[in-house]
Image 1 (tube, helix red, strand yellow):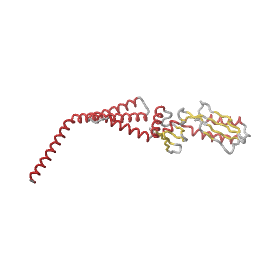
Image 2 (cartoon, one colour):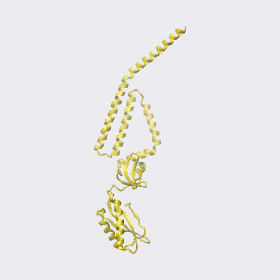
Image 3 (tube, rainbow, N blue to C red):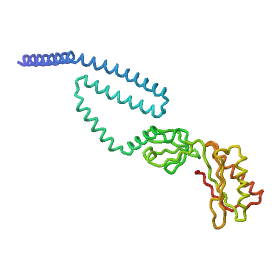
Image 4 (tube, rainbow, N blue to C red):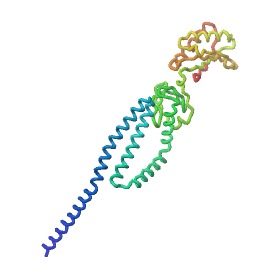
Length: 282
């Protein structure tokens, strides 16, 4: 009796296994065309995406687009094509894509709400890249800092200050704020101020300053340098000295003019007040 029961159980297991095996092979036969076509689409699609991406990059290089903008657009195109390929791949396998798209939409909404600041910086980076208020190599003043632009990224702009410090400014506030670009015009005017005694003959002092500026090799003759009385205070005459120079010569010109004017005033016996105001934001 026990032997008969064991034999029946073994036959039952064999029959169940055979039915599962037959069902598996039927499933393989049924889905093989879909699986093969989906794999082919995936392989061909990956090669096509790589080819399209390279082609787009070459076109943008030939059109001499901004390198940052070119890289950004190429990366966006790459990921969009990859997502489309993935959706096509799973739909070819017979998987419903409507629920998948709904999940992506919900995830995108959640990420967008949690990254509002980053999205603002992203939009700011796009505006900077498209409208180009400055470029790499320009010296700018924005958000209370001054520096030379070393890199324009999608979320931040990197500046190098005069004392070689690296400053990262978020693109969101940068694009929405005031930007002073000292390099865009190619030339720059200094606004230096000497404080002179009331005993000074203003006409002679102006002639001395003008002579110093005209003799300096890096002071531009066009536009012409200027010298004028700026203000009269209780104890001093403030004389404004405004030479023009190229951007790359600006710092040296300011320093040289101050030094040369001081020496010329000493030779002429003109008394300089014990304090001096200097402003270089002209």
